[in-house]
Image (cartoon, rainbow, N blue to C red; front, side, top):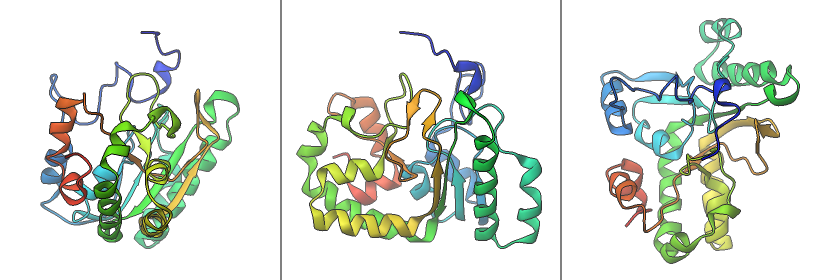
Length: 241
């Protein structure tokens, strides 16, 4: 496989490892939810790559009120923490998260060229059950279309070999009927209350941006599909049968 020329610029390169990794073992979403469930949080900010996926958002729906995260990778500079603290202590949770998201994007838009690379999403978790119900209808009615879908036509949020992160809106729009999509889109807009992205993230064009990624199953992904079935999102929506 071709080596990644930008590996040293992103937090998910092989030297940094993945979120929750220790001695070769990695934390999955269920473990993360269990670890965080002792308390309820006003917000959680994930300064790590590829976290703005609907599966994570649904798994943490009862853990916090707001999630701020990125569906793509994050450059190694991460969040501009010097711009964040005042908002956290002086504003309501939603207002603070919006301010931080805006500061994050403004920070990376100050750069030119390849360093002008960032995506951000703010999710309101209490609205996500309605999104799951809208998706359940789509997934139940279009299982065959989903498995046969040409994923190269769906906006990706991954680069190179991480073929598990696609734009949820672009995905649903390609398989749903018009009425199903309209119901889904209304629900999505109640969940993702702030989203922004540069035109490119490194060498990845961001042409369709809803702010949340989703896994698109394939019949041959046996191990991934079996693991996916354990997630609360799949149990609520039936994406993987």
